[in-house]
Length: 365
Ligand SMILES: [Zn+2]
Image 1 (tube, rainbow, N blue to C red):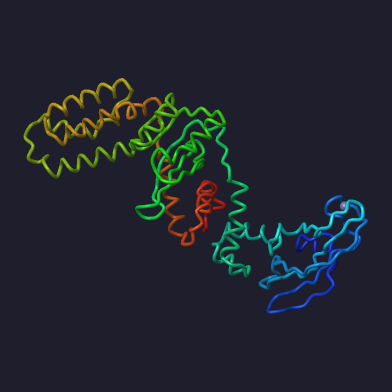
Image 2: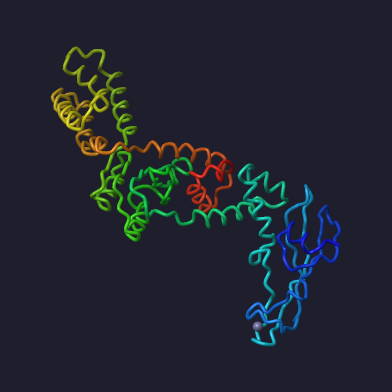
């Protein structure tokens, strides 16, 4: 027969003996039984107990090679002569009512580093949902409540979970690239939970990078008025480029007025050629003045937008942060979404987001 120490080393099972084994439906079935000398009262650990009935249970264990292994065992009901407690004996090798061993759960998590949920499920003869649930629990214990105590610089952004209608807002620690908060929806409401957490832990956020979203700006003003709020360069450049493209196609080539031409050209150099904040300030203000004097409504409109975002654009000179890290994460999110056909489990999706910076655990879906 299989000896007890083999049960322990191979399957993580202690205090049991194997009475027999056989094969059934292409599985190896080990009939195991708790050793009498290891029986204790689950409440007071007394040995003065009476066996009071039992139920049969099967547990999936780690396979031997490609062959699945099932542990078939009696779970005793125990009545204690000392404390009077009357309950089922404790099973230490599986959690709660689960039908697989803790050792098998560990194997699932290890395999998910190098394989997809689908292939791990196939290899271990488990369902897709079982593998997902195991992964979800592990992610929850590791990433369920992200630590934000030392966070100083954050980037905020949003993305569409499903094209066009379901949104999530993420807050990223710009130093570590970790997602530290996932909010449902977009806009100020999506950030409420984050600010509550900031208050709760007394965290002082010093630098914040966002795009030009009015909702984010308002939310930052309300909850972190003292933080340096930087409008992300990437988004400002995009705003400029869009305006330039429009102008180009509509009027640049017919434009004879040198001043107007210079204004349009100047947009390219508006921010990036300036060495200091003072230079940038005067260049920006001069450009806004010139742009407004052109009396061309499209240029005036851009000038007004730039004027409205002036402080956030110039804040970059105080603190060179951007949402570049957030954009990097957005690319990973795209891969995650593309591979994640079965992400109807919103909480699981959220946990996968929290784990995104940890490449080991998120290379595969
Ligand atoms: Zn007892």
